[in-house]
Amino acid sequence: MSFNKLDKSKTYLITGAAGFIGFFLSKQLLEQGCPVIGIDNMNAYYDVRLKYARLEQLKLYELFTFIKGDISDQEMVSRAFEEYQPNVVVNLAAQAGVRYSIEHPDVYIQSNIVGFFNILEACRHNPVEHLVYASSSSVYGNQQKTPFSVTDKVDQPISLYAASKKSNELMAYTYSHLYGIPATGLRFFTVYGPFGRPDMAYFSFTEKIMAGQPISIYNHGDLYRDFTYIDDIICALEHILPSPPKADETGTRHKVYNIGNNRPERLELLVETLEKCLGKTAKKEYLPMQAGDVYQTYADVTELINDFEFRPDTTLLYGLKVFVEWYREYNRQAD
Ligand SMILES: NC(=O)c1ccc[n+]([C@@H]2O[C@H](COP(=O)([O-])OP(=O)(O)OC[C@H]3O[C@@H](n4cnc5c(N)ncnc54)[C@H](O)[C@@H]3O)[C@@H](O)[C@H]2O)c1
Image (cartoon, rainbow, N blue to C red; front, side):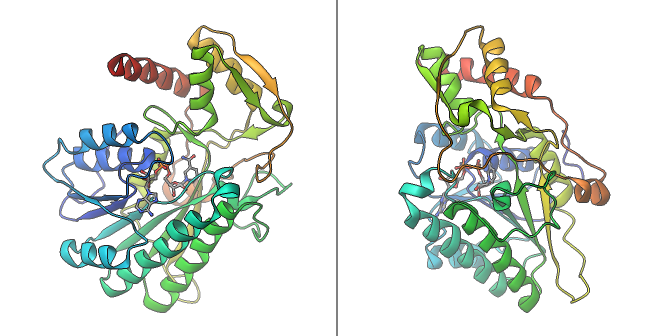
């Protein structure tokens, strides 16, 4: 992977820098000699040791500055913008997870709505060249039409997480329109890979299979996900960060892209591939569909191809092999 299109004279502010995607993006930017200001509140939604381990790696770079803070703290956010005057901002900090939003709705409002509002306000008062922010494939809800296109109407989110992400797109559009902030929203589709998130199925299944515990397979395995490998996400960001959107017919500079593999896989295939990579058979517990979960995700990436001649294409087998290698090594070191 190369980041040769990125400008080293610019300062990049990445929120959620100790998170899965934020870590890989920060690392890639730092490798290319770009200064990175990382913000993260290091919350314990999943094993915080993983976040500290990522942070340790980022702190090896002189050009990395870390602020431990919460983006719902308006004062902290505006101080960071005033002090570092970032040129490019990537907002990845959010409370993720569909199922968790059923039990803990408040944190989605704080981090995803209030937090994102603070980022927009900071961009308004400290003009940036490009604001890129994470949305999600979950905005498509239970849409029947596939593949999911950014031109589809998405007004029926079925979880508060999805509603918060759709709200972010609306808020970003408004701020772009009113204050001329060039902004791009990215609808990520089930991102996986090494150093990933333990709350996601591929990771928790791996832990359970290794421990000989049963894995819960929802909707009796009849679920489809467009699994997207982390390197493809970073490549997409490589194309998008230096390319703020052009003005639309109303003069607004806002655009949304799907970042997905364009190849939905049945949940059973994920399990079979993991079993192959781990050399162990899973004990399976078949359960009904969970509230807030969608039946399938499938990205139409036409816009990404048209604008950047890029499409994610890593196979599930390759991506899971790399994940399993990392998982074994990480756990060896932890022992
Ligand atoms: N991984 C995926 O499959 C996926 C899919 C769709 C969308 N997304 C979105 O992409 C972004 C990054 O996801 P990820 O997989 O890296 O998740 P992650 O949970 O690993 O990373 C998010 C990071 O943000 C931090 N954070 C959360 N709330 C914060 C707050 N209020 N202030 C400061 N820091 C805060 C967390 O501590 C975490 O380190 C999120 O916005 C997520 O909703 C991810």
